[in-house]
Amino acid sequence: MTELQKVERRLVQLLVLGLLFRLLINPDQRRQYSSWISGGNLSILGLLLLLESSRSLCRTPGETCQLLTKMSWTLGNTLVQFAARGFQPKFPKWTLQFELVRGVMRDAATMFGDRIVDPTQAPVFRWHSELFGSFLGWFALRRHGLRLEPVVFKGLEHLWVKSLSASQAKKRLVVLFYHGEGYAVLSPRMYIPFCCDLLAAIQRELQSQTSDVSVELLAANYHKIPEFLFLAPAEDAVAMYEYLLQHEKLEPSQIILAGDSAGGGLVMSTLLRIRDGKSTWKPRLPVPLAAIVACPLADLTGDEDPRKASNCVLSPSIIAASIDTYRPLGETPRA
Image 1: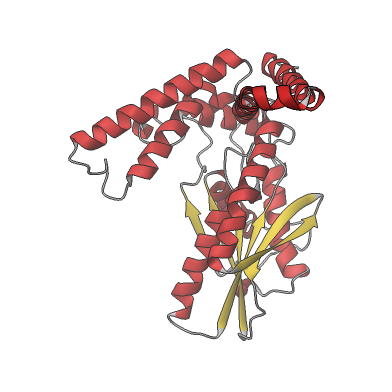
Image 2: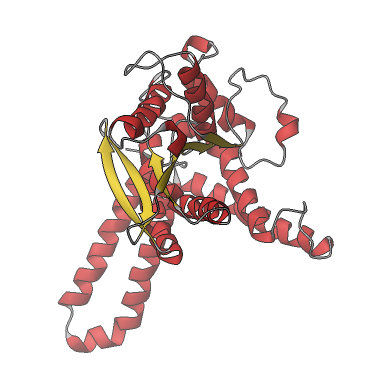
C-alpha cells in the first residue's frame, strides 16, 4: 500500500466518524454544529477525491501537491501568454482550451509519465479512465443520438457505438478503432466522446455523397503492458479485424481501420500483418477499405530528437517508458 493510499484510508475513517458524530449527537447540538460538521465532511470528501484522482500517477500526498502546484503555474502562465499574444492561440488550429489542457497533461507526463508502465499504477490509471470516460461518454452519446453496446471477446470488453434507431440503409460500414496511450493505459470507454465525434464526422462525409449507407464504430480493446508485452497487443488488433469478418460477416470493403497514438501504431501493425499473412484464422487476410491514423506511435527505435516534440501533449519520458517496456529485450518489434 502506497503512502497516498494510507492517507486515503485515514480520510475515509474521518469521514465515517464525522457522519456517525452527526447521527449520534442530540438534535440541538446537531443544529448548532450542523454547518461545521457538513463543512468538515465536504472538505474531507473533496480532499479524498483529489487524492484518488491523482493516485494513477502520484504515490504520496507530497507528489500530489507538487503536481497541483506545477499545473496551477502552467495554467496561469498559459493565460498570461495568451493575453500577451492579443488573445490569439499559439498556433492557428489551437484553441485556448486545448492549450490549457495540453499544458497540464504535459506537466503530468513530464513529472510522472513513466509510471504508466508501473505494474501497480497502470491498473489504477485504466480504472480511472473507465469511470471518467463512462461519465463523459454518457453526455456525448446523447448529444449525437447514439447508443453504446458492449461486447466481450477474448476476455476483453469492446464497445459498439451505434445509432439509436435501426438503419434501413443498404450498405453498412464499420470503423474499427484502436485507442492510444502508450500501449499501457486508458480504456475504450475513455474514448467514447472522441469516437462519437469521429463517427458523426464520417457519417456526414459519406451521406454528403450517398444517403444509402450507415456507419457504426467498434472501439476495440487489447491486452496492455506491463502485464502483456509484444506481440499481445498486435495480435489482439488483428483478432478484432478477424472478428468483424467472421462474427459480423462483413466484407473487407465495409471496414475502416482507425487509431491514434499507440492505436495508430496498431492500425499500421495490423495492415502489415495482413500483408504478410500473419493470421491464425487463414493464410491470407483481405485488406480493409481504408485506414485512418492520428499521431501514430509507429517508430519504436526511440531515436527521435525530443526537442522536436516540445509542443506535444506527451513527454519524451513517457514515450521512452512505453517503447522500452513494449519491445522485447530492447529490440525493435516487427509487426
